[in-house]
Image 1 (cartoon, rainbow, N blue to C red):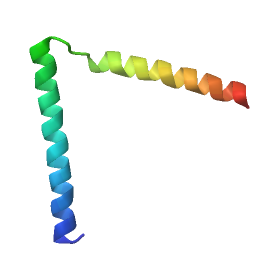
Image 2 (spheres, rainbow, N blue to C red; image 1 turned 60 degrees about the vertical axis):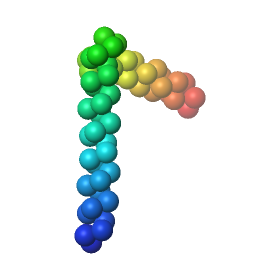
Image 3 (tube, rainbow, N blue to C red; image 1 turned 90 degrees about the horizontal axis):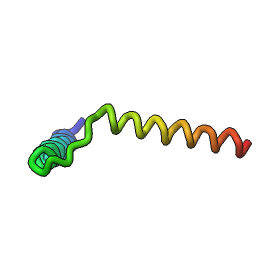
Image 4 (cartoon, rainbow, N blue to C red; image 1 turned 135 degrees about the horizontal axis):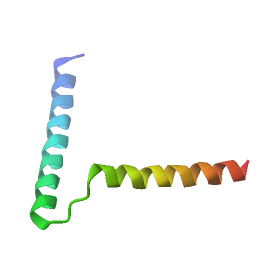
Length: 58
């Protein structure tokens, strides 16, 4: 990988991490924090529903 490409990837990852940390801090400060378990549970429900609809469509 060329140096410019490596630098671009690092900048992208750095920005991603900075946004994640800022979001976490804002959630904690506001008291509006959703646990990972809650998010994963909701995603699992959505996936199950989507799979059910796809099976019906076949």
